[in-house]
Image 1: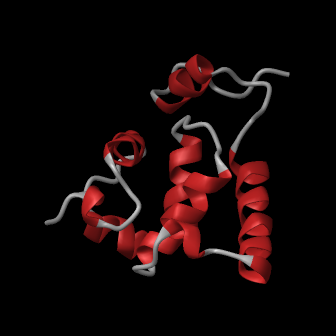
Image 2 (image 1 turned 180 degrees about the vertical axis):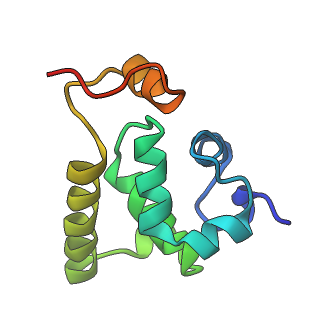
Length: 110
């Protein structure tokens, strides 16, 4: 099994973020795919960041992060916005998200 940081564009911060989401190897990340893995990371409480998302997408394609431009980047922005909308709660603190993950908080605050 390979470390996540063997994927282009991903380093120690990505390793830590995906570990929080229960993803520990490059093979797992590739099998899950960019959108599902990023959704799991968001659900695990990482802060959404567009560059991090498209660096992941590019890395899984074996491309440098800055290879994303034009219409492709605009399409990725739409996917990112949908993921962020569907997998984050802007009213929830990181602590509340963590407590929810471990089963202490039953639902998001009103």
